[in-house]
Image (cartoon, rainbow, N blue to C red):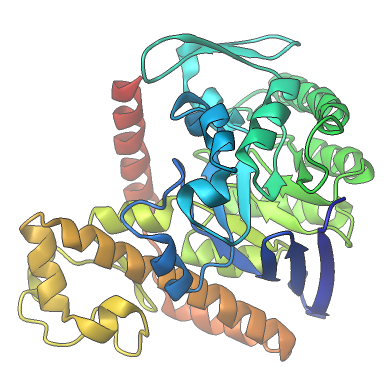
Length: 393
Protein backbone atom coordinates (compact mmCIF):
# COMPACT_ATOMS: atom_id res chain seq x y z
CA UNK A 1 0.00 0.00 0.00
CA UNK A 2 1.31 3.46 -0.92
CA UNK A 3 2.30 5.68 2.00
CA UNK A 4 2.32 8.79 -0.18
CA UNK A 5 0.33 11.85 0.85
CA UNK A 6 0.44 15.53 -0.05
CA UNK A 7 -0.91 18.33 2.14
CA UNK A 8 -1.04 22.02 1.22
CA UNK A 9 0.12 24.00 4.24
CA UNK A 10 -0.25 27.54 2.85
CA UNK A 11 -1.00 29.36 -0.39
CA UNK A 12 -0.11 32.82 -1.65
CA UNK A 13 -3.11 35.00 -2.46
CA UNK A 14 -1.17 37.02 -5.07
CA UNK A 15 0.36 34.15 -7.05
CA UNK A 16 0.15 30.38 -7.42
CA UNK A 17 2.91 29.80 -4.85
CA UNK A 18 2.15 27.23 -2.19
CA UNK A 19 3.93 25.39 0.62
CA UNK A 20 3.19 21.74 1.17
CA UNK A 21 4.21 18.54 2.94
CA UNK A 22 4.77 15.21 1.18
CA UNK A 23 4.92 11.93 3.08
CA UNK A 24 6.80 8.99 1.52
CA UNK A 25 7.93 5.59 2.83
CA UNK A 26 11.40 7.04 3.47
CA UNK A 27 10.47 10.33 5.06
CA UNK A 28 8.85 13.73 4.84
CA UNK A 29 9.49 16.38 2.18
CA UNK A 30 8.57 20.01 2.78
CA UNK A 31 7.89 21.97 -0.38
CA UNK A 32 8.98 23.97 -2.26
CA UNK A 33 12.02 21.73 -2.50
CA UNK A 34 15.08 21.35 -4.70
CA UNK A 35 16.27 17.78 -5.39
CA UNK A 36 20.01 17.26 -5.90
CA UNK A 37 20.63 14.99 -8.88
CA UNK A 38 22.49 11.75 -8.21
CA UNK A 39 22.46 10.45 -11.77
CA UNK A 40 24.44 7.27 -11.13
CA UNK A 41 23.43 6.66 -7.50
CA UNK A 42 25.70 9.46 -6.33
CA UNK A 43 25.58 13.23 -6.28
CA UNK A 44 28.99 13.92 -7.79
CA UNK A 45 31.78 14.43 -5.21
CA UNK A 46 29.59 14.49 -2.07
CA UNK A 47 28.54 11.73 0.31
CA UNK A 48 25.03 10.94 1.59
CA UNK A 49 26.09 12.34 4.96
CA UNK A 50 27.08 15.64 3.33
CA UNK A 51 23.77 15.72 1.48
CA UNK A 52 21.99 15.57 4.81
CA UNK A 53 24.20 18.36 6.13
CA UNK A 54 23.31 20.71 3.25
CA UNK A 55 19.61 20.08 3.91
CA UNK A 56 18.69 17.62 1.15
CA UNK A 57 15.32 15.97 1.78
CA UNK A 58 15.03 13.97 -1.45
CA UNK A 59 17.40 13.16 -4.29
CA UNK A 60 16.86 12.18 -7.92
CA UNK A 61 18.56 9.29 -9.71
CA UNK A 62 18.47 8.29 -13.35
CA UNK A 63 16.82 5.12 -14.61
CA UNK A 64 18.59 5.19 -17.98
CA UNK A 65 22.11 5.34 -16.53
CA UNK A 66 21.46 2.85 -13.73
CA UNK A 67 19.88 0.25 -16.03
CA UNK A 68 23.05 0.34 -18.15
CA UNK A 69 25.47 0.41 -15.23
CA UNK A 70 25.52 -1.36 -12.80
CA UNK A 71 22.08 -2.74 -13.77
CA UNK A 72 18.78 -2.64 -11.92
CA UNK A 73 18.91 -6.35 -11.07
CA UNK A 74 22.19 -5.89 -9.23
CA UNK A 75 20.82 -2.89 -7.33
CA UNK A 76 17.73 -4.93 -6.44
CA UNK A 77 19.98 -7.65 -5.01
CA UNK A 78 21.38 -5.07 -2.57
CA UNK A 79 17.87 -4.19 -1.40
CA UNK A 80 17.33 -1.29 -3.80
CA UNK A 81 18.90 2.13 -4.26
CA UNK A 82 18.51 3.20 -0.64
CA UNK A 83 20.68 0.34 0.62
CA UNK A 84 23.02 0.36 -2.36
CA UNK A 85 24.00 4.02 -2.01
CA UNK A 86 23.38 4.32 1.75
CA UNK A 87 20.82 7.12 1.46
CA UNK A 88 17.89 6.66 3.83
CA UNK A 89 15.73 9.53 2.58
CA UNK A 90 13.24 9.66 -0.29
CA UNK A 91 14.46 9.01 -3.84
CA UNK A 92 12.80 9.93 -7.14
CA UNK A 93 13.88 8.14 -10.29
CA UNK A 94 13.09 9.58 -13.70
CA UNK A 95 12.23 7.29 -16.59
CA UNK A 96 15.29 7.89 -18.75
CA UNK A 97 13.11 9.37 -21.49
CA UNK A 98 15.02 12.65 -21.60
CA UNK A 99 18.37 10.88 -21.80
CA UNK A 100 17.14 8.66 -24.64
CA UNK A 101 15.77 11.74 -26.41
CA UNK A 102 19.16 13.44 -26.12
CA UNK A 103 20.85 10.54 -27.94
CA UNK A 104 19.47 11.88 -31.23
CA UNK A 105 20.60 9.64 -34.09
CA UNK A 106 21.20 6.71 -31.72
CA UNK A 107 17.48 6.13 -31.08
CA UNK A 108 14.35 5.04 -32.97
CA UNK A 109 10.82 5.59 -31.70
CA UNK A 110 7.84 3.30 -32.28
CA UNK A 111 4.45 2.89 -30.64
CA UNK A 112 5.84 -0.03 -28.66
CA UNK A 113 8.77 1.90 -27.18
CA UNK A 114 12.18 3.28 -28.02
CA UNK A 115 15.15 1.41 -29.48
CA UNK A 116 18.52 2.99 -28.85
CA UNK A 117 22.22 2.30 -28.59
CA UNK A 118 23.95 2.45 -25.26
CA UNK A 119 26.27 5.44 -25.00
CA UNK A 120 28.66 3.18 -23.09
CA UNK A 121 29.27 0.33 -25.54
CA UNK A 122 26.87 0.79 -28.45
CA UNK A 123 24.80 -2.25 -27.47
CA UNK A 124 21.14 -2.19 -28.55
CA UNK A 125 18.61 -1.39 -25.81
CA UNK A 126 14.84 -1.30 -25.91
CA UNK A 127 12.67 0.57 -23.42
CA UNK A 128 8.91 0.28 -23.18
CA UNK A 129 6.46 1.77 -20.67
CA UNK A 130 6.22 -1.69 -19.12
CA UNK A 131 9.97 -2.37 -18.88
CA UNK A 132 10.57 1.03 -17.26
CA UNK A 133 8.09 0.13 -14.51
CA UNK A 134 9.94 -3.15 -13.91
CA UNK A 135 13.34 -1.43 -13.81
CA UNK A 136 12.15 1.26 -11.40
CA UNK A 137 10.57 -1.40 -9.19
CA UNK A 138 13.98 -3.08 -9.00
CA UNK A 139 15.57 0.27 -8.15
CA UNK A 140 13.09 0.62 -5.30
CA UNK A 141 12.75 4.41 -5.37
CA UNK A 142 9.87 6.16 -3.61
CA UNK A 143 8.60 8.23 -6.56
CA UNK A 144 8.89 6.89 -10.11
CA UNK A 145 8.21 8.44 -13.51
CA UNK A 146 6.85 6.77 -16.66
CA UNK A 147 8.49 6.65 -20.06
CA UNK A 148 7.64 9.80 -22.02
CA UNK A 149 8.68 11.66 -25.16
CA UNK A 150 10.34 15.04 -24.88
CA UNK A 151 9.70 17.02 -28.07
CA UNK A 152 12.65 19.18 -29.18
CA UNK A 153 12.80 22.96 -29.23
CA UNK A 154 11.81 24.17 -31.69
CA UNK A 155 9.30 21.74 -33.19
CA UNK A 156 6.15 21.97 -35.27
CA UNK A 157 2.67 21.82 -33.72
CA UNK A 158 2.21 18.47 -35.46
CA UNK A 159 5.39 17.06 -33.89
CA UNK A 160 4.36 18.42 -30.51
CA UNK A 161 0.92 16.80 -30.68
CA UNK A 162 2.26 13.44 -31.85
CA UNK A 163 4.80 13.35 -29.01
CA UNK A 164 2.19 14.38 -26.44
CA UNK A 165 -0.44 11.88 -27.54
CA UNK A 166 2.05 9.01 -27.63
CA UNK A 167 3.23 10.03 -24.16
CA UNK A 168 -0.38 9.87 -22.95
CA UNK A 169 -0.79 6.36 -24.37
CA UNK A 170 2.47 5.25 -22.81
CA UNK A 171 1.39 6.64 -19.44
CA UNK A 172 -1.84 4.65 -19.56
CA UNK A 173 0.25 1.53 -20.18
CA UNK A 174 2.57 2.46 -17.30
CA UNK A 175 -0.36 2.69 -14.89
CA UNK A 176 -1.45 -0.83 -15.83
CA UNK A 177 2.09 -2.23 -15.66
CA UNK A 178 2.82 -0.70 -12.26
CA UNK A 179 0.07 -2.77 -10.68
CA UNK A 180 2.33 -5.83 -11.06
CA UNK A 181 5.10 -4.34 -8.95
CA UNK A 182 5.73 -2.45 -5.69
CA UNK A 183 2.53 -0.91 -4.28
CA UNK A 184 4.57 1.34 -1.95
CA UNK A 185 6.03 3.22 -4.93
CA UNK A 186 4.26 6.34 -6.19
CA UNK A 187 3.96 6.90 -9.93
CA UNK A 188 3.81 10.52 -11.09
CA UNK A 189 2.29 11.38 -14.46
CA UNK A 190 4.20 13.58 -16.91
CA UNK A 191 2.61 16.56 -18.65
CA UNK A 192 3.98 17.34 -22.11
CA UNK A 193 2.86 19.56 -25.01
CA UNK A 194 6.14 21.19 -26.08
CA UNK A 195 5.68 24.94 -26.64
CA UNK A 196 2.02 25.01 -27.65
CA UNK A 197 -0.12 26.53 -24.84
CA UNK A 198 -3.25 24.68 -25.96
CA UNK A 199 -1.42 21.35 -25.93
CA UNK A 200 0.03 22.08 -22.50
CA UNK A 201 -3.47 22.72 -21.17
CA UNK A 202 -4.83 19.61 -22.86
CA UNK A 203 -2.05 17.43 -21.45
CA UNK A 204 -2.52 18.89 -17.97
CA UNK A 205 -6.21 18.02 -18.07
CA UNK A 206 -5.69 14.52 -19.48
CA UNK A 207 -2.84 13.48 -17.19
CA UNK A 208 -4.35 15.34 -14.23
CA UNK A 209 -7.53 13.27 -14.56
CA UNK A 210 -5.63 9.96 -14.45
CA UNK A 211 -4.97 8.26 -11.08
CA UNK A 212 -1.48 9.69 -10.62
CA UNK A 213 -0.89 11.01 -7.06
CA UNK A 214 1.54 13.63 -8.41
CA UNK A 215 2.50 15.29 -11.68
CA UNK A 216 5.79 16.15 -13.36
CA UNK A 217 5.98 18.90 -15.96
CA UNK A 218 8.31 17.73 -18.72
CA UNK A 219 9.68 19.05 -21.98
CA UNK A 220 10.86 22.42 -20.67
CA UNK A 221 14.39 23.77 -20.15
CA UNK A 222 15.46 22.07 -23.40
CA UNK A 223 17.08 25.11 -25.01
CA UNK A 224 14.22 27.61 -25.07
CA UNK A 225 14.49 31.13 -23.58
CA UNK A 226 13.42 31.32 -19.96
CA UNK A 227 10.56 33.63 -20.85
CA UNK A 228 9.16 30.90 -23.12
CA UNK A 229 9.34 28.36 -20.30
CA UNK A 230 7.54 30.72 -17.94
CA UNK A 231 4.89 31.35 -20.60
CA UNK A 232 4.22 27.60 -20.88
CA UNK A 233 3.88 27.29 -17.10
CA UNK A 234 1.40 30.17 -17.00
CA UNK A 235 -0.67 28.25 -19.54
CA UNK A 236 -0.30 24.91 -17.76
CA UNK A 237 -0.81 25.60 -14.06
CA UNK A 238 -4.51 26.61 -14.15
CA UNK A 239 -5.32 23.25 -15.77
CA UNK A 240 -3.48 21.21 -13.12
CA UNK A 241 -5.39 19.66 -10.20
CA UNK A 242 -4.72 21.67 -7.05
CA UNK A 243 -4.50 18.63 -4.75
CA UNK A 244 -1.52 16.98 -6.50
CA UNK A 245 2.15 18.00 -6.07
CA UNK A 246 3.87 19.45 -9.15
CA UNK A 247 7.41 18.58 -10.12
CA UNK A 248 9.15 20.74 -12.74
CA UNK A 249 11.61 18.43 -14.47
CA UNK A 250 15.19 19.55 -15.10
CA UNK A 251 14.82 23.13 -13.87
CA UNK A 252 17.04 24.44 -11.10
CA UNK A 253 18.76 27.78 -11.49
CA UNK A 254 18.16 30.12 -8.52
CA UNK A 255 16.07 32.61 -10.50
CA UNK A 256 13.97 29.76 -11.93
CA UNK A 257 13.21 28.43 -8.46
CA UNK A 258 12.00 31.83 -7.29
CA UNK A 259 9.97 32.54 -10.43
CA UNK A 260 8.49 29.08 -10.92
CA UNK A 261 7.38 28.68 -7.31
CA UNK A 262 5.14 31.66 -8.04
CA UNK A 263 3.89 29.81 -11.11
CA UNK A 264 2.68 26.94 -8.94
CA UNK A 265 5.59 24.49 -8.92
CA UNK A 266 6.49 22.49 -5.80
CA UNK A 267 9.49 20.30 -6.67
CA UNK A 268 12.58 20.96 -8.76
CA UNK A 269 15.63 19.02 -9.93
CA UNK A 270 18.60 19.96 -12.06
CA UNK A 271 22.28 19.12 -12.56
CA UNK A 272 23.06 22.83 -12.99
CA UNK A 273 24.16 23.64 -9.39
CA UNK A 274 26.60 20.72 -9.26
CA UNK A 275 27.74 21.05 -12.87
CA UNK A 276 28.57 24.75 -12.76
CA UNK A 277 30.29 24.25 -9.39
CA UNK A 278 32.72 21.82 -11.01
CA UNK A 279 33.64 24.51 -13.53
CA UNK A 280 34.09 27.27 -10.93
CA UNK A 281 30.60 28.78 -10.94
CA UNK A 282 29.42 29.41 -7.38
CA UNK A 283 26.10 30.94 -6.35
CA UNK A 284 25.76 34.05 -4.21
CA UNK A 285 22.80 36.29 -3.47
CA UNK A 286 24.17 38.73 -6.07
CA UNK A 287 24.51 36.08 -8.78
CA UNK A 288 26.96 33.46 -9.92
CA UNK A 289 30.67 34.18 -9.43
CA UNK A 290 33.65 32.48 -11.03
CA UNK A 291 35.90 31.36 -8.20
CA UNK A 292 38.77 31.02 -10.71
CA UNK A 293 38.81 34.81 -11.04
CA UNK A 294 41.98 36.56 -9.88
CA UNK A 295 39.92 38.77 -7.53
CA UNK A 296 39.61 35.81 -5.16
CA UNK A 297 43.35 35.10 -4.96
CA UNK A 298 43.76 37.01 -1.69
CA UNK A 299 40.15 36.96 -0.46
CA UNK A 300 40.35 36.20 3.25
CA UNK A 301 36.61 35.89 3.79
CA UNK A 302 34.26 33.09 2.66
CA UNK A 303 32.76 32.73 -0.80
CA UNK A 304 29.72 34.59 0.54
CA UNK A 305 29.37 36.40 3.86
CA UNK A 306 26.56 34.94 5.90
CA UNK A 307 26.51 31.59 4.09
CA UNK A 308 26.18 28.72 6.57
CA UNK A 309 27.53 25.95 4.34
CA UNK A 310 30.48 23.81 5.49
CA UNK A 311 32.74 25.41 2.88
CA UNK A 312 32.03 29.01 3.87
CA UNK A 313 32.20 28.23 7.60
CA UNK A 314 35.63 26.62 7.34
CA UNK A 315 37.55 27.88 4.31
CA UNK A 316 38.50 31.20 2.74
CA UNK A 317 37.57 32.07 -0.81
CA UNK A 318 41.32 32.32 -1.47
CA UNK A 319 41.79 28.69 -0.49
CA UNK A 320 38.89 27.54 -2.64
CA UNK A 321 40.33 29.64 -5.50
CA UNK A 322 43.72 27.95 -5.01
CA UNK A 323 42.15 24.48 -5.08
CA UNK A 324 40.40 24.95 -8.40
CA UNK A 325 43.38 26.65 -10.00
CA UNK A 326 45.55 23.72 -8.88
CA UNK A 327 42.87 21.28 -10.07
CA UNK A 328 42.76 19.63 -6.66
CA UNK A 329 39.98 17.09 -6.06
CA UNK A 330 38.94 18.73 -2.80
CA UNK A 331 37.65 21.73 -4.75
CA UNK A 332 34.87 19.71 -6.39
CA UNK A 333 33.54 18.65 -3.00
CA UNK A 334 33.73 22.12 -1.45
CA UNK A 335 32.25 23.90 -4.48
CA UNK A 336 29.40 21.40 -4.79
CA UNK A 337 28.58 21.65 -1.08
CA UNK A 338 28.34 25.43 -1.37
CA UNK A 339 26.01 25.41 -4.39
CA UNK A 340 23.74 22.69 -3.02
CA UNK A 341 23.43 24.47 0.32
CA UNK A 342 22.61 27.71 -1.53
CA UNK A 343 19.78 26.01 -3.45
CA UNK A 344 18.35 24.20 -0.44
CA UNK A 345 18.51 27.30 1.74
CA UNK A 346 16.76 29.21 -1.04
CA UNK A 347 14.01 26.58 -1.15
CA UNK A 348 13.61 26.82 2.63
CA UNK A 349 13.45 30.62 2.43
CA UNK A 350 10.79 30.39 -0.27
CA UNK A 351 8.75 28.06 1.90
CA UNK A 352 9.07 30.38 4.90
CA UNK A 353 7.96 33.37 2.79
CA UNK A 354 4.84 31.50 1.65
CA UNK A 355 4.00 30.43 5.19
CA UNK A 356 4.26 33.98 6.53
CA UNK A 357 2.58 35.62 3.51
CA UNK A 358 5.65 37.50 2.23
CA UNK A 359 6.41 35.56 -0.98
CA UNK A 360 5.68 38.50 -3.36
CA UNK A 361 8.08 40.73 -1.39
CA UNK A 362 10.69 37.97 -1.21
CA UNK A 363 10.45 37.33 -4.96
CA UNK A 364 10.79 41.01 -5.84
CA UNK A 365 13.77 41.53 -3.54
CA UNK A 366 15.58 38.39 -4.68
CA UNK A 367 15.15 39.04 -8.41
CA UNK A 368 16.15 42.71 -7.99
CA UNK A 369 19.44 41.66 -6.43
CA UNK A 370 20.32 38.38 -8.14
CA UNK A 371 22.03 38.77 -11.52
CA UNK A 372 21.46 35.60 -13.60
CA UNK A 373 23.81 34.37 -16.28
CA UNK A 374 23.12 36.04 -19.63
CA UNK A 375 21.36 34.16 -22.42
CA UNK A 376 24.62 34.30 -24.39
CA UNK A 377 26.54 32.59 -21.59
CA UNK A 378 23.78 30.01 -21.15
CA UNK A 379 23.82 29.21 -24.85
CA UNK A 380 27.60 28.81 -24.84
CA UNK A 381 27.34 26.44 -21.89
CA UNK A 382 24.60 24.40 -23.58
CA UNK A 383 26.69 24.02 -26.72
CA UNK A 384 29.73 23.00 -24.69
CA UNK A 385 27.81 20.36 -22.73
CA UNK A 386 26.01 19.17 -25.88
CA UNK A 387 29.36 18.67 -27.62
CA UNK A 388 30.69 16.74 -24.64
CA UNK A 389 27.61 14.48 -24.65
CA UNK A 390 27.97 13.82 -28.38
CA UNK A 391 31.62 12.85 -27.90
CA UNK A 392 30.52 10.32 -25.27
CA UNK A 393 27.97 8.81 -27.63
